[in-house]
Length: 323
Image 1 (cartoon, rainbow, N blue to C red):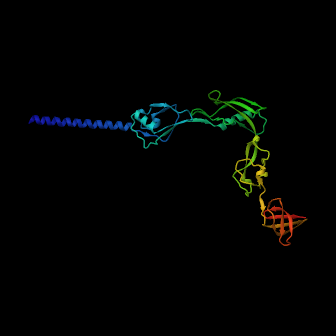
Image 2: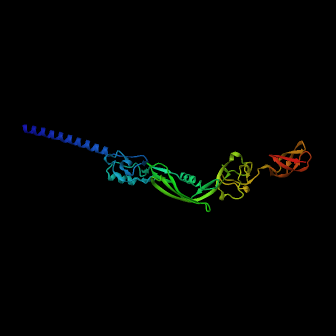
Image 3: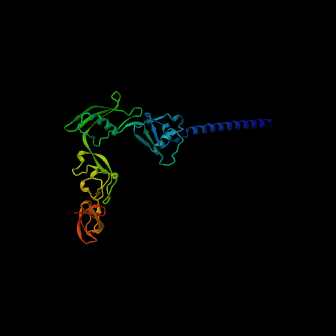
């Protein structure tokens, strides 16, 4: 009987030890899973360094956070990691992550300092202005993309060097060094032509026949002088008060043939006839036998005398007869 009791006590002790060991194992395993659990970061990640790491893509990546997956995109560029790529990364590093859907992705961008084309052209123009005799000009480089992308730790500055200008052909060449000659991270040779500019009126919005052009309908815009046709309207005063013969588009040069004086009198319309004789002005009512714009001479019938006279259109539904 005693031996049975000893065996039973030993069995219970062994069971307790096993239970404690199993509990400890589960706790450790649970902690490992918690450490390995990872969350995909926001849709777009901007990097400043040269390498892409696991920690750039996943939160809670644990000891794998510093693992380098490869080089970061070039400054100013980006790349997309789609669902299948993310799954392969997570699987290879034993990260406990599953996509919410097959459209999960992350965009990796590299921070950069950007010098836009317009800034490059302005810098060259300042240098060439010392050599050009044209009063107003612009630089034409065709379709050449002059954007300069530098690492984000570099300033957005540049030096313009080796500027040449041929006055006979109006061609130029210049070298851009960014951020400076002393620190030539990027070097760019720019060629093109110097073109004279003329400022002319254009419409702010499209107008149709019958719309009278007012001062608020136009803006003055610079165009290459060589692109302006001989019959293009050059002054705002030549456009104001006119109306398009047909639909006129915004932002384009306006040709004289595209405009006409607005029609102020319609055929058959009642008009006021003003008779001017020296210092005297007499008025009468009449009917227009023709349509016309300001300054046109049309036939009108005096309603009182039933007499037809020639009159000059002087305003809306108004004509003038002078002796």
